[in-house]
Amino acid sequence: MKLLIDSPAAEDGLLLIDEFVWFGNVENGDNLQSRLVAEAQSNQGNPIPLVIVRQGALMNITVAPRPWHGPGSLGCHFRILWLSSCDDELVIFI
Image 1 (cartoon, rainbow, N blue to C red):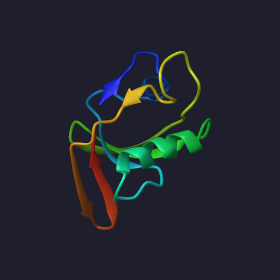
Image 2: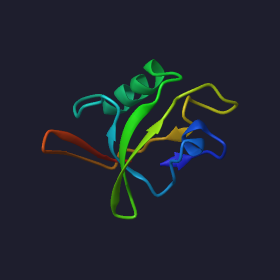
Image 3: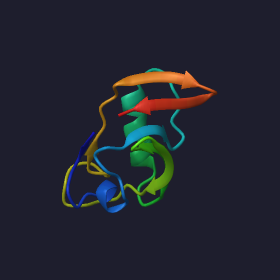
């Protein structure tokens, strides 16, 4: 993940070391990256629940996409490295 300083994602607590396990209502399947972007765009100003792995521990946090002086509504670039379905939950390491 690429995370910009002073971005909404950084202000809401995301760190470069975080790995995404769950992002809002997005489920595994085709066109995953475009659906992640659509989830952020359709939730402008509203918190999106995330499950992340930080230093080996699962954590629940929220991020709120919003306008800011940089690119995108969160200020981070997702890079999908691996996908797996596990117990009907989406597992995405970004």
